[in-house]
Image (cartoon, rainbow, N blue to C red):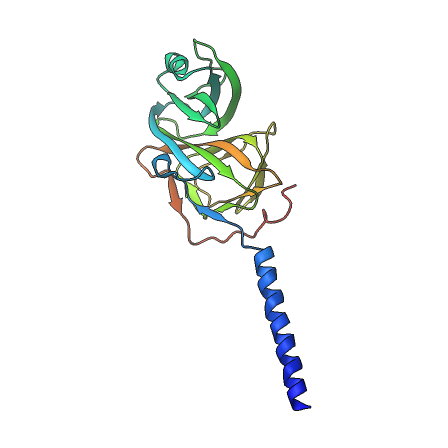
Length: 228
């Protein structure tokens, strides 16, 4: 009788361990990309990749805008580029990304995609623009961090939820632009059901690093569930 009991307990333990193992495999922890890395270190499509970090000079006003134009070729985009413009190839297109006043247009016009802003800055400060390509599957998240200038996104596809101490904001294609001012800690998560594909700007003070890891704030998990 005792041997039967021991056998029954062994079988029960076996199935318990198996169930836990299968549950862990079917519910893996969400992937994290940490922080963005230089595009020269890119080995996969998925991740956050720094395309360029380029000075844009002194910004005299307290608000500035990010202008996104697309061109058929890189030479055409280079011809259209102004003193605060950057040409990048991202998401299968050639982009002219410019930091200018509201309503600005390049003299050699391409296809206007978006004008994002206003971006809150410190008048008279020197700024640099970091442009990144972000490609995340749903559930991928960032490390907790902050920026020394405003951050903004252009979302081509997918959905992004960003939590800060004041709540959360969500970015979707065709939706209102997401602009986060300098300073607060933040935690970003790709939500929804589609792969997130976006171009991101950090317009940071040139004298400071664009991104700093934060260890004294813990997000509440506002972006874990539906971002609606």
